[in-house]
Structure formats: C-alpha cells, structure tokens
Image (tube, rainbow, N blue to C red; front, side):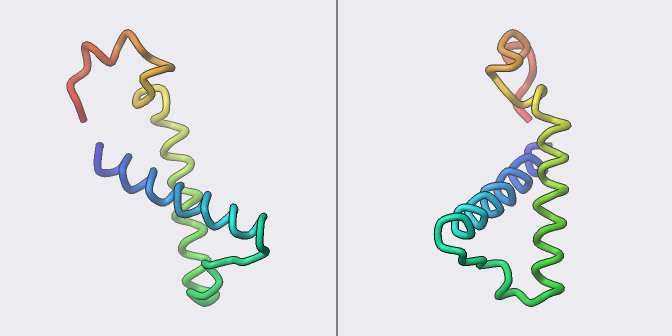
Length: 74
C-alpha cells in the first residue's frame, strides 16, 4: 500500500501545482497533453484524492498518533 500512497500523493502534488499555476498565472500545464490526456490526468488526480481521503486516518501520524508505534511500516 505504500506504493499506492506514493503514487496518489505524487499525483495530488502535480494537481495542486497545476491549480496554483492556474490561479496565479492562468496557465494550465495539463492542457498541453491534449483533450484526452488532460481528461486522464484529471481523473487520476481525482481518484488519488479519493484514495488519500479513504486512507488518511491510517497514514496520518497526527490523526492517529498512538497506532503508528504498533503498526509496521507500509
């Protein structure tokens, strides 16, 4: 599950940086992938957000500090 978390986190960072560029400079990097490529990236970022929401409590040390000592690393 660590690989899934790493992929989801990376995609969320990419999505967040893209939104930052859109907000600051009205510059959307994802559109350079074409319509289908952009659609795929947006879907992957959305699925990554759902995965991270579902797994957040399990992965977050601040939300679940007591259990982290007893759980083996993923």
